Amino acid sequence: METLEVTLGGRKYPLTLSPEEVDVVRAAAKAVEAQIAQLKNQYAISDRIDLMAMAALQIAVQASTQSKSDAPAQAAPSDGLTWPQKDVEDLLHRIHSALDT
Image (cartoon, rainbow, N blue to C red; front, side):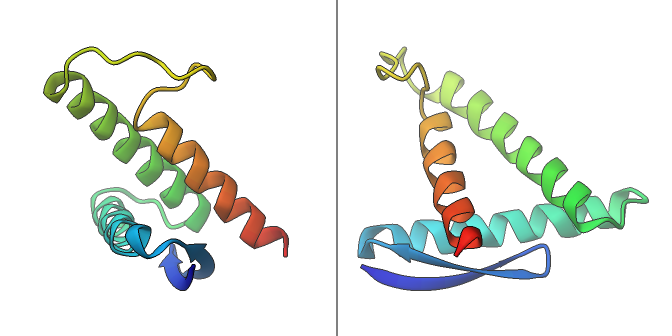
């Protein structure tokens, strides 16, 4: 496992990841930061939490739309979540765990 510190919305979050996840999470954090910057420039939103929430929503919608158009129908996991929902939920859980420590 590796420790990676990502910055989202001006806050640093330490994450413990497998080596395979590091590049994916790093790229995702960069995409979130870019989305936040774009929202900040487009709208009169200055609250960090609002920016992060709107960025997360936009990225989730984009990922959901892309996965539906790019991939054939997938069987849902037993918890009812589909990709990328499952990955997003797992990452959010890990972020919340990091914040609680």
